[in-house]
Structures are given as C-alpha cells and as structure tokens.
Length: 136
Image 1 (tube, one colour):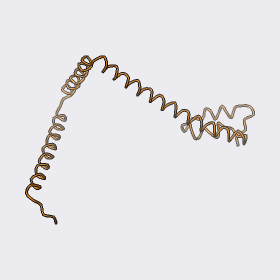
Image 2 (cartoon, one colour):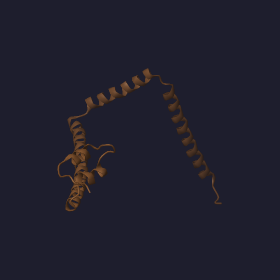
Image 3 (cartoon, one colour):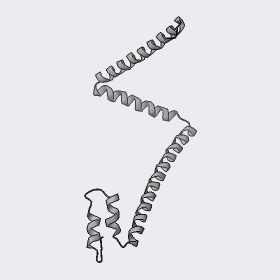
C-alpha cells in the first residue's frame, strides 16, 4: 500500500465533507418539496413563470430574434426528419410493390403486414373486393 501523507488525507476529508454537505442539502430540498402543499407548489410555479416573463420583457431585439431563429430552425429540423422518414417508408413500399408486381402478387396483401397496425384489415377487404384481385 502506498504511503499517504497528512496533506492528501486532509484533501480527501475536505472532499468527503463537501459531498456530505451536498447530499444533506439535496435531502433537505426533497423533504421541503414533499411537505409542500398544492397551493405552495402553484405559487412557486407561478413565480417561476413570472420571472420568465420578466426575462423576456428585458431581452433585447437581437436576443429575441436569436431565440426565435433557434425555434424556427428546430421546427425545420423536425419537419426534415418527418419528411426523411416518410421518404424512406415510401421507398420501402415502392420496393415491395415493384418486386411483387413482377410476380403478379397483390401489393396490398404483401406490404400491409409490414406497415399497418394489427387488426386493421380495411385495406385487405378493399383489395379482396376489387375485381380481378389475385392474392398469392
């Protein structure tokens, strides 16, 4: 075992004391929250909302534009993700349709089990009722 000098031991004790204090403070915070009534919770949340409104009122035009620009960019990214997912799904369906068309199979009956929710047989019924429908 390596020798430990008193200075190192002092640092370890300080760190342990800091961690203990943080744990005690966190536990006290949890205890206070547990004792809070619904009225106190609503009051605290109302205060937080009010501070948010005040911060927004104090922000400059540039800060506001920057915040709104970030929101718009986030919305664009989300829309792009949705479009990408839809495109990939379309490509999968097209691949299934093309493969099964060459075999003269019904694409609805072949592709729907992969993409529809269980128990959703409406499209199967429509396909089967179509004149000339051949499902292999």
